[in-house]
Length: 77
Image (cartoon, rainbow, N blue to C red; front, side):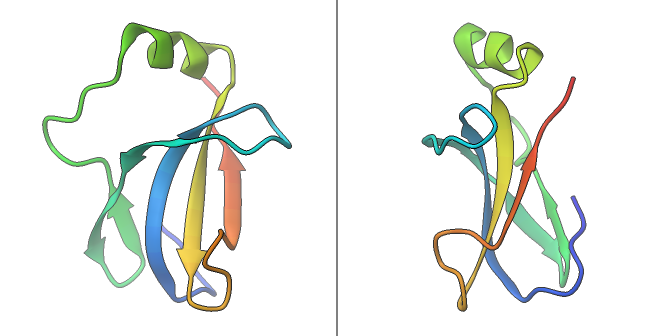
């Protein structure tokens, strides 16, 4: 994932429907100033895989200005 216009401090994949907050399930790794990726060897559960296909996963990008999350993007299969 690439970001712009934000100084991100962390990024995660969360499980939750659009408009609802949910727990982080994958912590993304910074690979460059504005680049993030899923760590090598990461696995998700069958239930999380089904949640992805149901549109129930999202990415949340955090910053110092907005530690709870500055950018949110629902993942679509």
